[in-house]
Image (cartoon, rainbow, N blue to C red; front, side, top):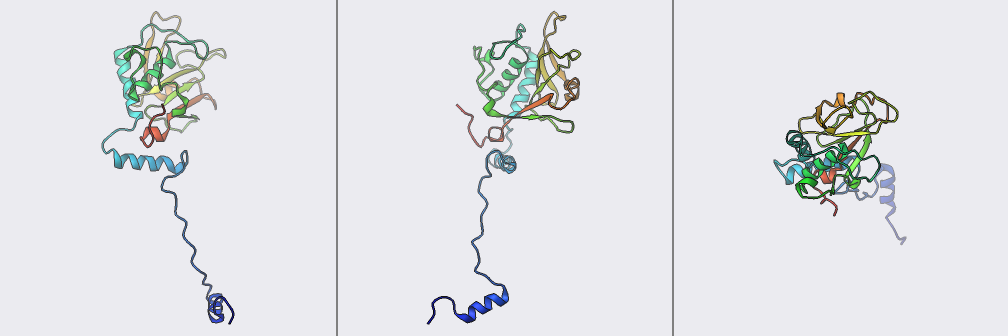
Length: 217
């Protein structure tokens, strides 16, 4: 007797096109981190596990609105090189991020350091183009400040999208006696940076926005 399937069964499979059933592949329970599906999955998990709560970027936007009202930044001091401490637009945005993420802005914990506000591990940076919508908590960096006519030697400027959709910033021009707390539309804020690559959005990563992973130490 020959080993294997009976000849009649082999013939039946050949004629009918039937083949032994393959084990169906199952999609992973969690989409790969950074994939398109991960954000949708994280959002669904957040809605199920934290009903009625706000994603982590919402308190960042709320902090921007509060700081615009309370004006806590003190004397404006522009940092002119990377790593130099300052009390300027980027410092304001970092304070909003720290306050919103629950570790308090530096002036609310008696420190001159930011804990999460300048941590690039927490955000994804994308080049903005017309038609792309910003969202609450986004840091918006523009090549040319909206506060004065663009010149090649100007430095970048940054603000943060508040809980009302407006962009908040802390800025001082030489002709002003005091610094100002700005509240303007996104379109106005990017008005002098219309070319490709002149506006960058830094957005909290989905795993931190929707609490699927703890903030890094």
